[in-house]
Image 1 (tube, rainbow, N blue to C red):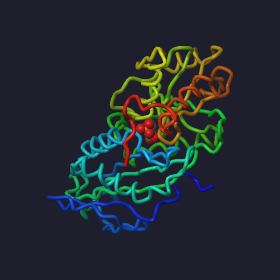
Image 2: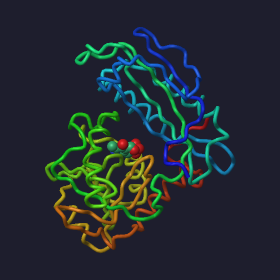
Image 3: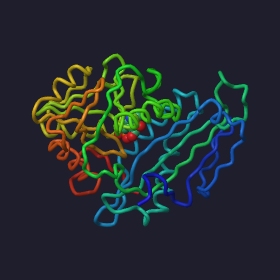
Image 4: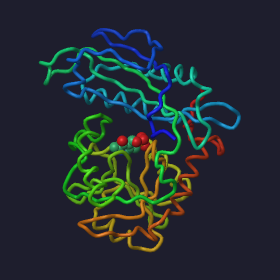
Length: 331
Ligand SMILES: Cc1ncc(COP(=O)(O)O)c(C=O)c1O
């Protein structure tokens, strides 16, 4: 099977902002995009994107999961990057139109259609290091996907990095390319030196998130994760899992979590940890690596509560449980 996100539908939805107005959305080939080599995005990283999914239900219908939240987050990322504002209703109809066009290609569970709206600054102006791009381009790519972690249900190994940061603290809330690029070297180093799957960034001992997912500690009936601030991405999956955990009567704590508390709780029998994200869904963490020492989380395997929460989320996404929170949009 191809790597997650490496297969694309042949067409995408696109609209251009010329400095005063957005063009009517069009459907064009997704093989290429014409940009001036001096385009603002290629030099000053005026780029942001989203990741959401459409699911095929047993009755053949296709539903998009929490589209409104993802559109809102892209609008916020655009604002924080000083990209031109776009009409959220326009993006919604671009997403609906392109998913409808490729409705028959949406894989059945556990697969889905990954939707990648992207907004980039296009103005050809290499002198605009400290000035926003006046023009931009918004497009929506589609990629049919299976499971993100090919290891299946194997629990992940995380390196706790309490010195480095994933990105600049005021940029964590922005889903922007530069944040991912800045986390690559630490992740590559952790893979090479500790066979870690991911780095859990914990600057100054504050447990934040990994390179592409949020972190949750599940200790008995308690579920603990960092409270929202500007330093990390406000995951839609994180919000969904916490909502489902509250529905199940769990004690959800959004607060600071230190490396010290994490390691102390992890040693308790029955403790679990997990990563949440659109791609990862909810994946167990079995081992934490800190200052050269390895710590098992609970029994070091896949956690039962993690599986229960993951199933509760998947059941809604796949139409096997009622959508009590109104998270699904029909085409
Ligand atoms: C850095 C980072 N944190 C968290 C997440 C989780 O966000 P979401 O659940 O909205 O996919 C992502 C994206 O998947 C991410 O890239």
